[in-house]
Amino acid sequence: MESTEIPETSHTPDPPRPSYRSLFRTREFTPFFLASSLQVAASTVGGLALGTLVYEATNSPLLSALSMFGPSLAQVLGATTLLSAADRVRPRATLTATALAFAAVMAVTALPALPTWAVLPLILALGLVSSVTGGVRWGLLAEILPEGAYLVGRSTLNIVSGLMQITGYAAGGVLVALVSPRTTLLVSAALYAVAALTTRLGLSARPPRSSGRASVGETWRTNARLLSYAPRRLTYLGLWVPNGLVVGCESLFVPYAPTHAGLLFAAAALGMLAGDLSAGRSVPARLRGALVTPLLLLLAGPYLLFALRPPALVAAGCAALASIGFGASLLQQQRLLALTPSHLTGHALGLHSAGMLTLQGLSAALAGGLADLTSAPTAITVMAGASATVTLTLWTAGRRHRRRAATATGTAAGTGTRTSTGPATGTGAGTGTGAGTGTEPGTGTGPAAGTGTGTGTEPGTGTGPAAGTGTGTGTEPGTGTGPTAGTDDAVRQRGVG
Image (cartoon, rainbow, N blue to C red; front, side):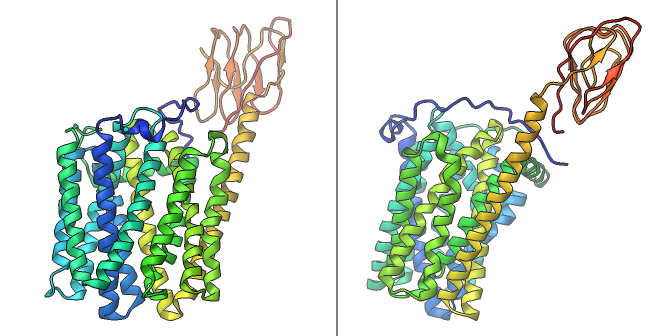
C-alpha cells in the first residue's frame, strides 16, 4: 500500500543561510572537515594506484574499473543488513575504527607478494564497512552543525572533496609514474591513519542517536518505511541512478586514456567542485527543485561526445562540464532531509550513500563489461545515454505524482453543499454515532446525536450537531431528510488515502 506519511518534523521556510566561514566557528566542524578531507585524498590516491596496478597486471578494463569502484558493490549488502547500526553506534569510535581499517587494507594491498586476485576481496570488505560509515558520518554532521546549516556544510565538504580529488589524482598520477603503484598505496594508508587520529582527537564522544539493537530486521523495516513514501522514493532514485551511471563513464578513464587518466579525473573533480559551489550558495530555495533535472541532464550530455573519440584535452573538458551536474545531488539531499523524520536522519543518509555507491559499483562493472565487448568510448556513450533516459523518466514520474497530489489537495480543500431538513451534517464520518468509510478516521467539531452516514475516500468533518437522520455521499452533494425542517450548507473534504 502506498504510504502517505507526513514527516514527523516540520520544516519552516529557510532561515538566512550561514556563510562558509561561519561553519568553522562551530568547534567540531574543523576536525570533521580535516578528517573528511584526508580520507578523500587517501581514497583518490589509493583508487588511482589500485586501478593502475590491476590494469597493468590484467590489461582488463573490467577488472580495473572494479578495483577502483568495486567496494561500492558491497554497499548493497551493507544497506540491507547493517544500515540500522548507523544511528545505533557511537560516531567517533566508529569513524576512527573504519579509517584505521582502510589504512590497514591499503598497506596490505601494497605488499608485492599479494596476488592481484586477492585485492578484490579486500576492497569489497571495505565497501561493506563503508555502507554503515556513510550514515554515521553524515548523521554526525547534522548533529554538529546548527539547524539550517547542513546544506552549506555539505556543500563545503563537497567542494573540498573536489579539491582533494584534483590534488589526489594529480599527486597520485605523479607518484604512480615516478615511483610505483604499490608505493602510492602506502601513501594512501598513511593518509587514512592521520584521518583516524584527527577524528579521535578532534571530535567529542557522543551516544548513539537511537536506542535498541541494530539488526537485519530493523534495517529492512526502516528501509521499507523510507522507500514507501513516493516523494522520498523518487528523491532516492534521482540521487542513485543518473549519477551512478555517469560514474560508470568515469570508471573507464584509465582504459580510455591510460597515460592521461589523472587529467580526466582531475577535470571531472574540478567540474564537480564548481557545481557544488554554485548549488551550495548561489541557488535560491525557490529554484532548487526546478534545477535538479537540467543539472542531471548536463551530467550525462557531454559524455555523449565520447562517441567521436575526442583527444585527451577535449575529453577532459567534457568531463569537467558534465561534472557540474553533480550539483543536483546537493539539492536533492536537502529535499531528502526535509522529507525524513529527525530520528532517522543517519539511516536515511546512510541509505542514500549506500544506494549511490552501490549503483556506482554496478555501473562501473557494467561499463567495464561493455568496454570489454566493444570499446571504452562506446561504453561511455551508452552509459551517458542511459543516464539521460533515466533522468527524463524520473522527471515524468515526478510530474505525474505532483499532478495527482495537487488534484487530491484541491478536492480535499473544495466545498460542497448538502441540504437537509435539519441542521447540517458533515460528509463522511462524524463524531458520536455517525459512521463512514475511508482510510483515516474523520473528526467532528460538535456533538452528534443522530445516525448520519457517509461514504468517501477519506471521512470528512462534521461542523455542527445533528438532530435527525440523514444520508449523503462523500463524493457528490447529497440530500437527506429528517424530522425537522431547515436548510444549511456543510463543508466537506475528500482526501487521498
